[in-house]
Image (cartoon, rainbow, N blue to C red):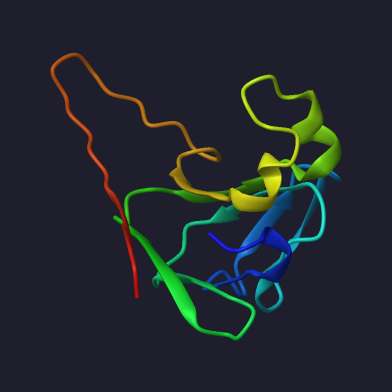
Length: 124
């Protein structure tokens, strides 16, 4: 993975967003860049997301089944990363979490019921 500062994530434009770092709710405008701690929960993406390198070339496509209610995008940034014992001090530079999730609404199952979802990461 390239340095996080050179990457852009596309595909969440126009979706409701909760910025968990600042505890703000808004709507995502455009692509996402990373220049410090980033932790946001989005309404579920309806189209594939693309991670692009500094030349704008797609490097990774992220898709998930429609029954996931949210997408979590997270990078600890330098300060938080330095406090995480399971990551190298500069590990934030080469990691990004883009995770299908159910944050806004719990999935409740009765005994014997099943639920499944999928997430697919593919190189482009």
